[in-house]
Length: 587
Image (cartoon, rainbow, N blue to C red; front, side, top):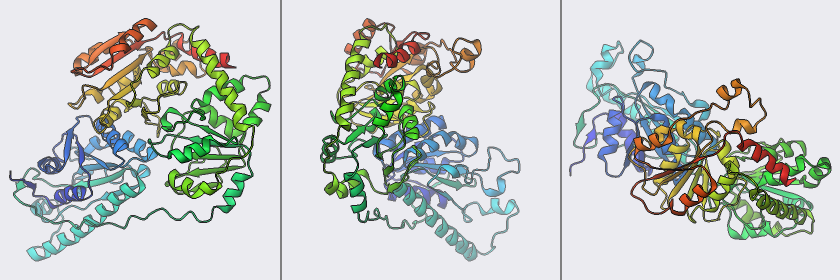
């Protein structure tokens, strides 16, 4: 089969750079200005192309793929406001260290701000949330008569025109090499802006340009240097706390997990999104902190928990309680381990080791000898008590978000990928343990609800195991266009906690019983989720009590011809009271 190519050198150059760097997944939103890119990507069997109409959804869909692959995935859009709809996904990719490649078609510069249709100022539109950008230059050998008609001067001679085009080609190759290398090395979003003049749809039978695909050498991490000083701090500290934020599975190997877990002077706090497991770790941070907040001897117990050395790994942490605690009871030393950036989340950062956690702990392993301490045993006893109290409490309460989450997380099949929406969903998930085989992800970079469904569907396409999305009713409706595509796997599962509004605002301090609160904060809704499922070909199930939930979960994950959604309806006016009373009960 003869493969055809766009006749616009710039569009052809972008496509060939992507191919040379192994960027295979291309998410395209419809438009005319991006036609040369669309025709070029879809004509080459190397690329796997996806059509997503809504650019905001497309951005998160591509980001979900990149989240799993840990390599670049591209989104391609037309000119104008289409580009702006990528911004939520760009910001999330920036703060979550995900290589999202935004390729935007643009009008030529001489058509910007003169009243031409579908034009905005696209250059550097995302500049504060990128690791790199490439504002490419327009070809002069394509449609030179249109360029001259705009009043721009071009050389009359063919040789001079070709020489100018050669300079443009060199510039564009260099800009693309830098941007695409940056996405890979820095693990973050890049923006490539591509100005194209009409005609846009013409094709030729062979390549019209051979791009210079090269890039700066990928530098390895800088040597850590001597760790003796830090080894002495480790050995001299009898209260060490390790907090593991959002991380991909396998970030730490079993040897280092055992070393940390076996040291009586170390507490390791994890969250569901940490994807790190050991029976001696503390997987529910708030279940330790919350009872202390309400204790009569609060000050003394917080001082007993206060670490001398804090070590943080991974990305964002969900728990607000651990942030508030450590900002007030600050450690003397705070080391962050990570190859990119180190956020001073706890206002106490003293050292950033620019290395992967695996690299650091391999170098630091000679110093990881355990030390006698009551730190871990004391708090391990607290952990066992809250687990006993939790089981007691769950046996007493009525059907609610808390009880539903317990049953849902207890019954997720082993090996599943679990995608969590933000707001109350990810917070409830922290209260219960998950089987170590379940891989957990959530858009915690910006913690928004805007793209949870789209991210989960994109992620599911490059994951061999089935995917479960647990979301809330507002998150589902906010990103309902995430279901508007042809890529839903039949084994894709969604569980929606429908408490008829933004239930998290009832947990936060506020005037919950006022009309103003219900309208502008909780935003009460009574939309019919079953109709949304019918629109997109998703099987709908509903549970409104404990028995109904358990009965549906018995068969919910069995093979099916279509994806399934389970709507769990819980009492809007009761959920917050049950959760807040839970923490009282633990104390």
